[in-house]
Length: 111
Image (cartoon, rainbow, N blue to C red; front, side, top):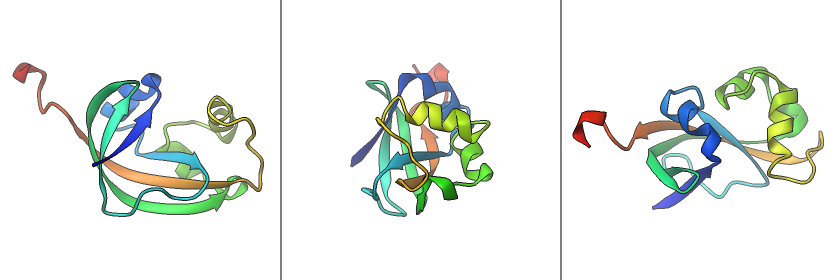
């Protein structure tokens, strides 16, 4: 099963359902309907099913898509993307990966 890695700082947003999409520079490496393992830092926190993939220029990303990625504005999204990519320009190609997250543990009592 392929893995989708996130920075550790996104763990709560993923588990809380506030991050339902990831925006990655370049072209898709995943497919719609594919099941993937979700990692926050080095910790596996669950699985997800990829529900939709879109390829867009950065300038074409909508406010709804920014919110699904867990951000409040395009400025904040751009700042976060710059932590991972040297440049983020209006014409740069990004893949938007929408997913349904499934927690690793159904309840904390099972631990």
